[in-house]
Length: 306
Image 1 (cartoon, rainbow, N blue to C red):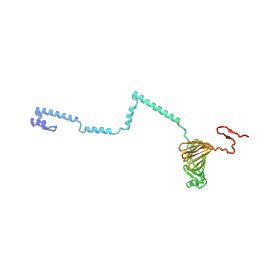
Image 2: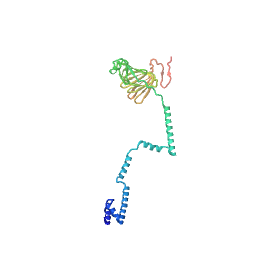
Image 3: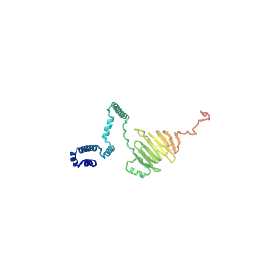
Image 4: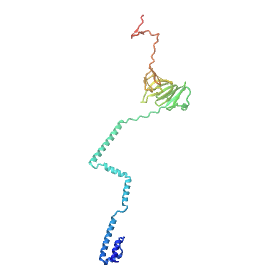
């Protein structure tokens, strides 16, 4: 190999390494040895630059790593740690806010406990469920009540409808609360009273005790409320007659009209309200026994002369 061939090899060779013949020629030629030394330095620089350059997939790997961290949910422990680092009293300002909020929270809890304790009321014991009893004094027993009457006690559940027929009489009682005689009536027993659908009912209610609800008799024309009294109801297709024998009752029409009746008073209610106002059955004097008369325009009676 001569100098010209060595120079041409250095300029045209793609590989960084050189053949052994170049080394052998350079030992005897100072000029070629210098060129070969420069070529070696260039190769060493190229190797350093190649090692320092990023790989072709470096950008893709970085983006994929970032996306994986963003899409992955943050662990709960890490969230709690970060939250505690934010609220922990590490500075004077944070300490004042932290202990101030803690004091307000403790005060609110103590106030709520004390206020709740002051408003608590003792629990009331549940009242026994109302159990009505029925017995027929006359007339036929409805088929709907035969099962209860054959049981022997005559007890019927709330919501049962009792029908005596036109001439029948039934005695209906709520032990310790109410006794009534249904005459040619049709009624429904409720927890706090009755619902009279037709006919007549003579009702006697014991005085109120133990904070129980007032006894109520519901009809199409009026609601009759009592606390302790003896009265009668007579319901027809066009009116309701309420007569009080003892105590006081409150009669209220669907239109909002209210009357309170005492012993000896009665009132008749119809679809439009009162048909007759409450009245007392005062005795009327006979004309034959009247001896005193009042002249028109005067306020004193004239006494007949002897």
